[in-house]
Amino acid sequence: MRNIFLFISRHFNLLFCLLLQGFAIYLIVHYSKYHEAVFGETANQVTGQVNKQFNNFSRYFKLKRINDSLANANEMLYNKLRQDFEIPDSIPNAVIDTLRIDSLTKYRKFTYRTVKVVANSVAQPNNFIILSSGTGKGLRVGMGIITPGNAVIGIITSVSNDYAVVMSLLHKDTRLSGKLKRTGETGTISWNGQTPNILNMSNVPKSAKVVVGDTVITSGFSTSFPAGLLIGRVEEIFSEKSTNNFLIKLRSFADFNNLNYGYAIDNAQQISVDRLLDSLKKSH
Amino acid sequence: MATIPKNIIRFVLLVLIQTLVLDNIRLHQMITPYIYFLFILWLPFRINRTLLMILAACLGFAIDSFRHHPGFHMAACVLIAYLRPFIINLLISQEDGEANYDEPSVKSMGGLLPYSIYAGILSLLHNAWLFLLEAWQFGDAWYFISKTVLSTLVTLALILLAELVVNRKQKFRTNTA
Image (cartoon, rainbow over all chains, first blue to last red; front, side, top):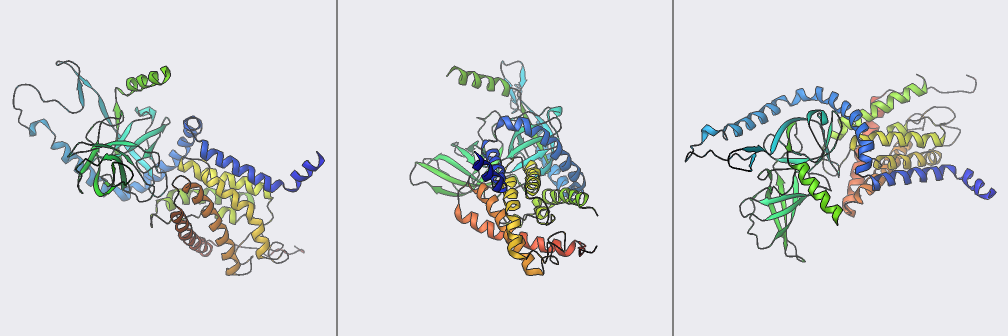
């Protein structure tokens, strides 16, 4: 027993170092949804405040680019206005963001909310985007975020009262269902952890007639995004030798180096879909 | 200025510079410039080793809070805090620097070369351990090695630049004073 105490007192610093290293590695490995709920909320409030103050100052240097992107978004919206189209018959046109249950009433499915990006990174292996609005402005975990140009940038992973943390598409855990716009095959979008703005699309069968330059859009299979939002453009196509699938490299439509404003997509049916999935998990 | 307030100010300033300025600089995907651990490098010679490691863990945790995944920088900071006294002992003799000056600097370590070696070894260790933990998830050896070497060169340049810019007055302490 005495020897043990002697050993500890002699090597206290080494043991203390190993203890702290062990604690740090434990945090890395076991950082989960639960910890995020406990630690994330306080940290979000503090770091969000710092990022917001700094953003207030640095935003002035970006005003020109923000103006340009908003003007472009406006142009796109003007082109979608009803008076731009001639209606072929007396039945009103279906609007993309509504879901019909019977032919007389329309139910809103998706609501868009403006969010401001206060911090963003692209150089890390796991990138996050911080927004300066949180539960107070109706944001929830699982909502999708897009740029004013309709391109996907990420999904909210944790929310505090005033801030939200978005898992960028440039994150190793990102999995998004994408669809080739021209031919219709779906695949999984992920990121290889190296070059910003280059995404991987896997699980596309070799029967798909993909060509370089094809557009990839959201499939609408996830509850976070409606179908048809832009993800990327095919840049290179590799055929995997061991499987029957292509591996496709995409250049993302969203410029992750330059994010200022975005829209959070509130899916009114997300909660009921999640509840169904939960009950499915419980019954198995 | 008294040691404790001075170091608190340094801690806050370095964390803010790192997270608000340096993290937004994208030189290349292989290069991540780091300077925040200069706080550990500049702590007094005579600091208790346990306290040094606790401070390093706090510093790493502060950086991790901005990155939204705790652990990575904490592990790297604790490692260099543990190894700092050994490297100081290797580079300078007890009588020269530690007895006469408060903190490691070009002057107190007896020239630019020993100081660069001190800063270089610690930044190499910091970056290597940090990128190793990060690379665990991706597992690409060449990516890891080239990123470590390139980032360390940039980090070292930043540290030497900080030494030129920041005027740290080093009093020569004597026994008579």
